[in-house]
Image (cartoon, rainbow, N blue to C red; front, side, top):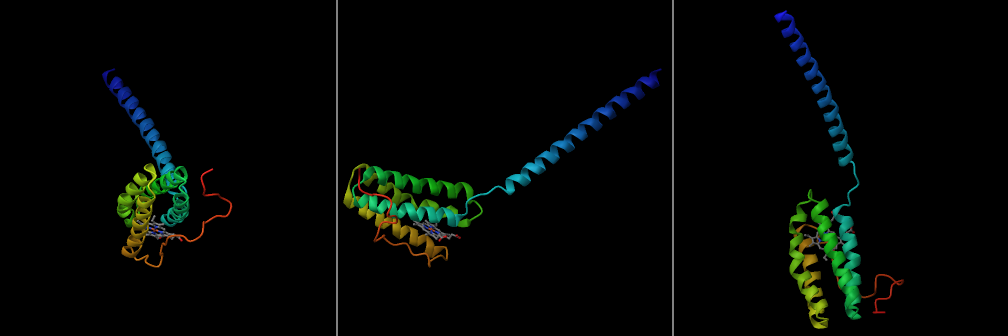
Length: 162
Ligand code: HEC
């Protein structure tokens, strides 16, 4: 009798642990499949963020030049968002660690826009553009030369304040 109780107990425990390991296996398979899906999810690349920044950099100039401070504020915030995106999604790129080098120029532009100060806007914009090129030079992308735009990037947008 005593033996059969022990046997029954061992049987139950074995059964339980078998079910447990079956559950663990199913769980592990689920985790593996999710990891696989995550790795295959589309993430914008560093160059795509840069192309977006290029557009906002150009628009920012014409917004500021036209003293359209609300638009200028919008464009600088778009640049800031793209820079945050680089830091979030491009952690595999060593250049992402140097993104903070733009902070000084962006702060200065934010202040200029807030104070509607054209002279400060221009000097902030020069500093921003020089910093873009400093990074391009220091990361062997010196062939991407950023300049102050001559013409508005789009003909279907009015840069003057409405
Ligand atoms: C921290 C470094 C860094 C800073 C700061 C930086 N860039 Fe870049 N930029 C890069 C790198 C690296 C690439 C090459 C990306 C790639 O591999 O596709 C690049 C590429 C570009 C390109 C080419 C994109 C393309 O695919 O044609 C443009 C345009 C550009 N940057 C604009 C800017 C502008 C405008 C600024 C300043 C507001 C700026 N960048 C600031 C590192 C930087």
